[in-house]
Length: 85
Image (cartoon, rainbow, N blue to C red; front, side, top):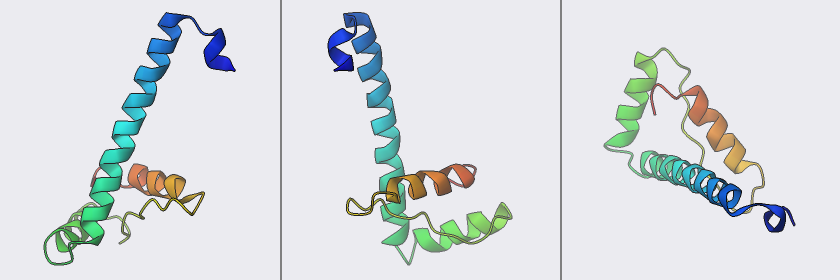
């Protein structure tokens, strides 16, 4: 177990880094959920922002626990559309 061999300082850094990544994932999940489930307010605004930045029209995919690669897909699109997100 790698955690058992880490020093206390290394463990604190590791858990701090994990917490930062977890927060970022949570924010992207919330944005994706709100865009998809708000067809009257956020979806048209998302479409307008995507067009304004001259990006191909695409929604942020949702992270689905039963699809192993859905987190990757969500992060990949979020990075491609970073200026809009």
